[in-house]
Picture 1 (tube, rainbow, N blue to C red):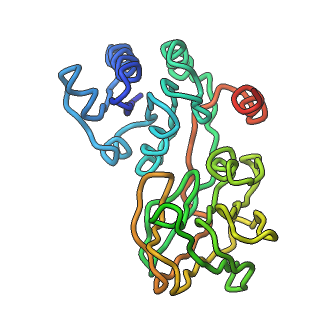
Picture 2: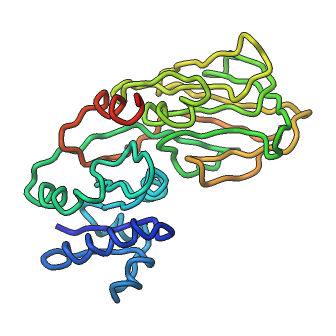
Length: 270
């Protein structure tokens, strides 16, 4: 089995755990580590795209942000080890990392597939979103004005800080804080949630994943940007054609059997 290894090197606990994982795996497996880990262990470093080509499973060590960063390029199953905060998407805490790896090596796991979103701006495809894509003001405390379409039919016109379009995975993230519902990952739908809308009637929508969601900015909107999974961002204007729909690609996670509802109870209801 060939492994990729990614970590949040800015967190000492995560980097230390990643080195332990590398040392355990490299005894009997090929390990493709990214630069921050490779420097520490004296091995060759690999990019995320190289890992995606070569690895069977990619291990992430850090928080949910590390997982989302990896998912921008990784299409292989991800075994996520939490060394960050809540770690909602992670499968094990760092103290159980080696035990979890032994279970994966023994084949005692399953792979859960989750939906991603395909985003295009003016016909150019951006990185897929595993959690959410937002169209938002680029200036704090400044409102933008936008129209929302589903399959070219207008569903909402409003002024707001922006709009979130989230996957079921993202329903427990940014969209949740904006008043969106928690969605079972098996549901083939996306959530459209306004960000601080200046309109009492503005409420979240649930739309089938195969539909096309369009976002059009009004010319009177100020500086605006589109942001994918809280990371990749670029400016957009009233002339931008923004389309969002379900992607043909999937996020894949190594799981040991704990259900989505158990994770919600353990990590959100506290």
